[in-house]
Length: 279
Image (cartoon, rainbow, N blue to C red; front, side):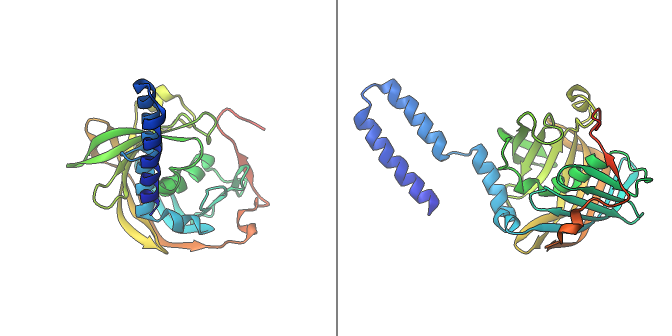
C-alpha cells in the first residue's frame, strides 16, 4: 500500500511539473530529485529496508533486550565463552564470561569486573560482538551511510552489496567501513567484510580486512539471526578466502526484559578507556 501511494503521488507530481515547467532542463532536474526521493529504483534505503524486512526489523525494535550464550574464537584464541545481554538499540551491554570476568557498558563507560581482571580491549569486545549480530537492524541509524557496490562475488555466487560508512563522531571508530552482502534469495545479511580501526589507523586497518559469513539462521520471536559466524581474510575481488580465522557460535537465544540493575556498574570494577583517552 505504501508503495502504491508513493507511485500515485509521484505520477500526480510529474503531471503538475509537465504543466508548470516549460524549461526542459528545469523539468529534468526536478524529475531526478523526485525519482530518487521516491526510491523506485534499487537504492541505499531499499537495500537497508530489504534486509530489515527479511530479518524482522520491526519485531527487533519492539523488544527491550536480547540475550544469547556465545563462544567467540579468533586468531586461534578463545576471546570469551559466556553470555551477552544488550538492549536492542545497543545503548547498554553486558558480557558475563564463564571465567568469572564480567564486562559492562552502562550507557557512558565500559567496565571490567573484578578490577583485578585482565581483559585487554574490553570496550572493543563489548561493542563488537553485539554489533555484528545487530547490523541488520542498525542500517537506518543516524550517521550511517550506504553506497551501492553492485554485485560482488561471495563464495561461488554474486550478491547485491553495499559499502557502509559513518559520519564523523558516530561510535568509537567512525572510520571503520563495512561491505554488506545481501542474500539474493532470502534477503538476509549473508556476509559482511570490515576493517577495525580501534587503536590503529585506517591505513593499517585496510591492510587486514576480514569478513564474516553468517550461517545457521534461527527465528526468535519474529526476528531471524545467524547462530554460526565464520571469519575469513577478505578482498573485494575474491571476497572471503582461505581458511577460517575465527568462529562465533550462539545458543539459547532469547529476548528479555532485564532489570535496570543488570547494567549498573559493579562495585569492584575498573574503567576500560578508548585507546589514547584517559579520564
